[in-house]
Amino acid sequence: MKAATVPGLIVRSQSGFFTVQTDQGEAVCHLRGRLKRAAVGDKNLAVVGDRVRVSLHSGNSGWIEEIEPRRCALLRTAPTPQGEIRQTLLANPDQLALVFACSQPAPRMRMLDRFLIICEKQGISPLIVANKIDLVDQEHARQLFDRYAALGYDVLYTSAVRGDHVDQLRQRLAGKISGLTGPSGAGKTSLLNLVRPGLGLEVGGISHATRRGKHTTVVRQLFPLPEGGYVADLPGLRSLALWDIQPHELDGYFPEMRGLVAACQFNNCTHRGEPGCAVRAAVDGNKIHPARYESYLRLRAGETDD
Ligand code: GDP
Ligand code: ZN
Image 1 (cartoon, rainbow, N blue to C red):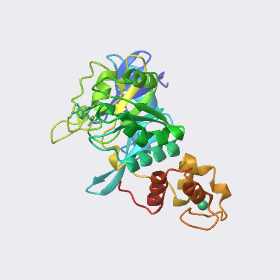
Image 2 (image 1 turned 30 degrees about the vertical axis):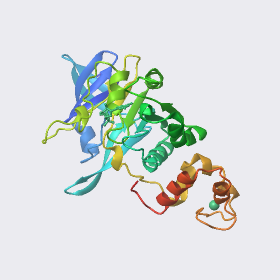
Image 3 (image 1 turned 60 degrees about the vertical axis):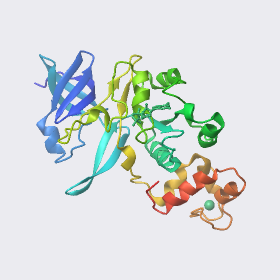
Image 4 (image 1 turned 90 degrees about the horizontal axis):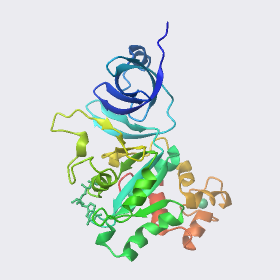
């Protein structure tokens, strides 16, 4: 007879141990061998954010019996002695909060553009967090980030030092499963500590709570929020690449371009200078921000650096 199973959410994973949140509390679970055999050698078989069904035994432990198909996921490439591998960092996020500092470090807008494309491709809502507004005048901050608000993206201007808009950030995160990423030093840890007091993540730490020392066991974790929902701190998304995106579909992930493409004279237009290009006309008419167009051109040319 098959054991009764209950639904759950993987909130932590470490060396083959998965902490699963269920209606009956947390349980530490292992994957059933048959699941592993069915997906030989796939280290991404179950990750934080996966919806699963577990059979529970006493003592808050159990087995993961089933993994539900993923709606979306955030991945990165990681170099290994066997070559580059893909790692799934977080399954099924509702939202990806992209934290950039207005200054110190200066924001790399091309990195932001890459993150936004990944969100567009995966169907994940981006939340742009322009932090450290205490370090710049408002005009400077707006000059950098208002172009994204104009495209319909949600932009929050925050200061972890002064507490500006931290409440709004908390509201945006409430009840959702969010990834949190951005360049090191942007203030992710500081903001997370304000949103969730008591978390006590180390500000200015090299790699936050996910790594200890040299012989690291990587712990991935969803931190529960007081208002409901979870946040996963995702340092190292820097190497996030644009997989599975064909050059010709790139314009579809730029909201300011995708509506124009049909108006280009050639239906295989690359928007790099063909006659009758509607995208180019919009750039020349200041309807598309030149920096966004430049991002498009560079990505189209296969450049992956910022
Ligand atoms: P992380 O690497 O993105 O997690 O960034 P941290 O939270 O560790 O912050 C990096 C540095 O920036 C620390 O010295 C913080 O005190 C500082 N910092 C974070 N947020 C702000 C902010 O809003 N304004 C200012 N002036 N400094 C900040
Ligand atoms: Zn065109």
